[in-house]
Image (cartoon, rainbow, N blue to C red; front, side, top):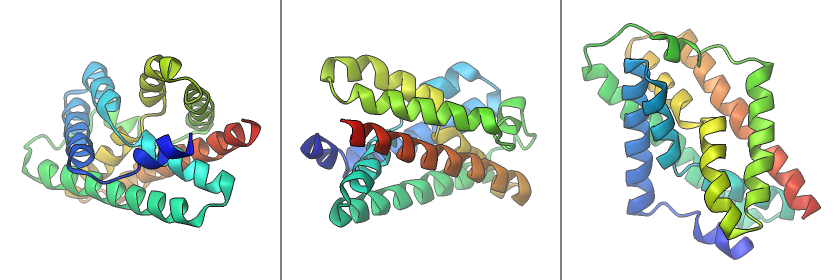
Length: 188
């Protein structure tokens, strides 16, 4: 498990390309108010890998894996926000859609979704066969990329309060997944 998580925690060209594509697809889906397009963006997002490696680092008390995970997550978050901010600056659509607004006011239901998604995703790691079926569902449920796309969109429009709300949703999801995944790793 450690080796497989470590292997998936690199910023290689494939990871960066998938992150950029998922962020841009999420932005377009948000602007079109299309849940189907947003789901597609979540399915190709590679962010679950460094999130789960951060949880494993927390569980094992492994500073090397923790630093690596933190670096990958930080660069991923910054990159996703930056690319959506730049593109949103050039897109003529400036009106916040219901899909965008839904990600600017996190609530306890969002927290519950993130906790249970983290549990399911971590349990799926026990079996490669199960992970192929479960991880995409976890990616859809927890939705870490769309809030980052909303941050970029809102910053491009100089709407900093909604951007802060979307970032809070992302952080809530991130922390909830890491904690729930760490609990599963401890039990495993």
